[in-house]
Amino acid sequence: MKNPTSIGPAQVSPIGTTLERHLLDRQRRMPEATGDFTGLFQQISLAAKIIGSRVSKAGLSGILGRTGTTNVQGEQVQKLDDFANSTIVSTVEAGGHVCVMGSEEVEEPIQIPSQYPQGKYVLQFDPLDGSGNIDINASIGTIFSIHRRLTPDGEPGTLKDLLQPGIDIVAAGYVVYGSSNMLVYSTGDQVDGFTYDPGVGEFFLSHPNIKVPQRGGIYSINEGNYHSWDKGIQSWVDWIKTPTQSKKAYRLRYIGAMVADLHRTLLRGGVFVYPPDDKNANGKLRLLYEASPMAFLVEAAGGVASDGKNRILTIQPKELHQRTPVFMGSPDDVADVLRFANA
Ligand code: AHG
Ligand code: MN
Ligand code: MN
Image 1 (cartoon, rainbow, N blue to C red):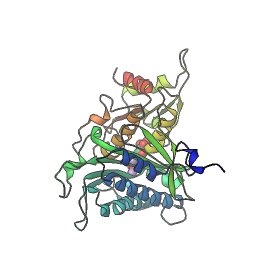
Image 2 (image 1 turned 90 degrees about the vertical axis):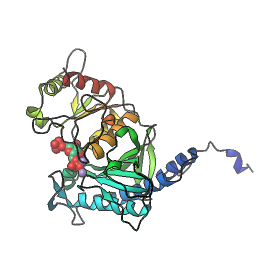
Image 3 (image 1 turned 120 degrees about the vertical axis):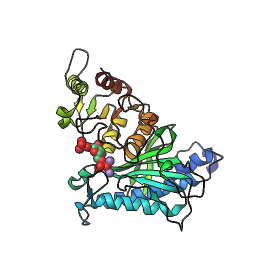
Image 4 (image 1 turned 135 degrees about the vertical axis):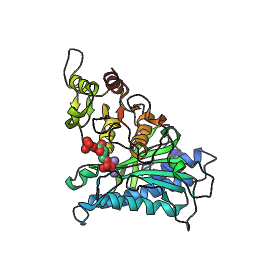
């Protein structure tokens, strides 16, 4: 009989790579790692499973619709925004890995209750991105980023810990609740995507080392705002949808959830833009928990993420809920739009 040990270590695992295994492999490659990061990530992944489960039953569980309140951005809060926010806070706060959190849905920094240890990381998140899509069963997402704390260990974290530029992100990711649920994350070296298997209750590696194509064929922008834009953005949109001898017309795709629009952009290429308009000098998207984490992922996948002039990752934040214009995606496509925008 053949010795079963002779098959050797190159054998592909029959169960695939779970997110947990991926994180543990990463931890073992870093001798100085304490397991804190892996622990925090496991709590984020648990929150993603809970939110994903609730999202998939949204029409059944009486959780569609609005709460009747508005958030710090002046936007209508959906019940699922609230649910997702408190799910993340309550799965993470007791873990001892973070010292403060920042959320789209909460005006001030979220402190860790004094009965729990104050950890060394800082978590920021958009609990539910694209919440206007909830009631029509279209894709939505969660966005997050992790920084190291700046304030002394052991003390409660402060606003200073939250106001850090994207270049200092330790890890960022998103969850897209779509035709399947996926968690995509990066620690800066590469971007890996995991698809949720609801039968098993785990995320499995399905999209290793995602690379954004150098150029795509899709542009993604809310063209209904055309008459509110500067001439430069208007001429770019006129140009990109006009076929010429040297190029085909680009296709327009706009889901209206940044996570879903950028997920497509990472996989297929193209460009996602939310420019300034005549009412919002900095556009709509928030720097700390939307633009910065997504810029971190786009750059790690070989793409470009600009605010129109500079890398989004180099912006020094001044306020928790500040906004920034966003031009992200395939390097050649971002170069095209910036040429028009800055002409
Ligand atoms: P949120 O639901 O977290 O407030 O984010 C919605 C954002 C973003 O996901 C999307 O790209 C953008 O709003 C769409 O805005 P418009 O409807 O103005 O196009
Ligand atoms: Mn959002
Ligand atoms: Mn949101």
